Amino acid sequence: MNSVFKNQIVWVTGASSGIGEAMARDFVKRGAKVILTARREDRLQKLADELNQGSSTPCAKILPADLSKLNELSALTDKALALFGRIDVLLNNAGVSQRSLALETPFEVEEHMIKLDLISPIALTKALLPHFVKQKSGRFIVTSSLMGDLELPGSATYACVKHGLNGYFYSLAFELKEHNIDVQVLQPGFVRTEVSLKAVTSDGTSHGKMDSTHDKAMSPEKFSEKTFKKLERGDTSIIVAGKEGLALPVRRWFPGLYRTIVAKTAKSMFKERFVDSKT
Image (cartoon, rainbow, N blue to C red; front, side):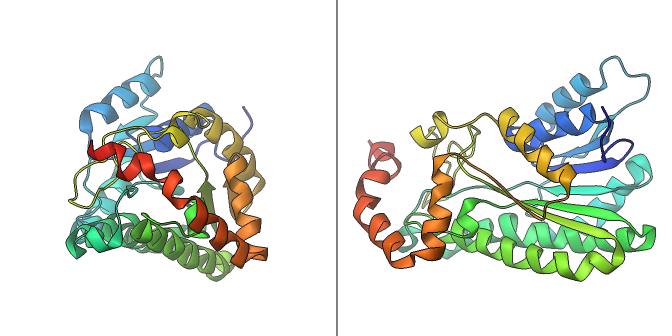
């Protein structure tokens, strides 16, 4: 397969499931080698074994890590660079979602989300940036969300971090053009991943159930397929969503209408998240 990613080294965080796992497979299909990072080492190893099957030299190596440990990210970057000798692409994909109301959520829970979802991708990007500048090429890809442009009840912290990712990485895209470094922001809608299962509740534990919005959504494989067409085309803003994507133009052009719709439908929209989950 002829691809801009052929022979490139791609570091994928959040690679143990969902979007990260699906995109890691598609990078390898396009001739890239991948570094797989997440906390669940057993899942990373299983994926690496699958990707390396039939290959005379490894095309996938694992680098388990907890990316919320910000003081370890510089050393982690050095380890990642040593695995294949260089890195050409960083896919910042690790993170958690939220199923909790701000009034009921201790700041410590919010702080952990902000560290993992916002500060960690920025810190990892900063750690790798000198390498990209030195080799005069590179690509940062970050998984944001439609929530980077929307607001919904029960998702205040999640909206905060996704708005922050959009602001930082869309701005960074302008700054790094002169260094031949690309920045691309992925804004998925609903994707059938573990995102709702592992979403953080008010006490810091996992939501533990698949929301109907995600259970009926597109698969990670379909998301990846649609995303790669836009990645290879060089798009900076990459929105891949179902009908929920219609909320973006409504929010942009008719903000009052958007807020009215959300206010009127919030009770039914979030019943399964805040009522059924506690029964």
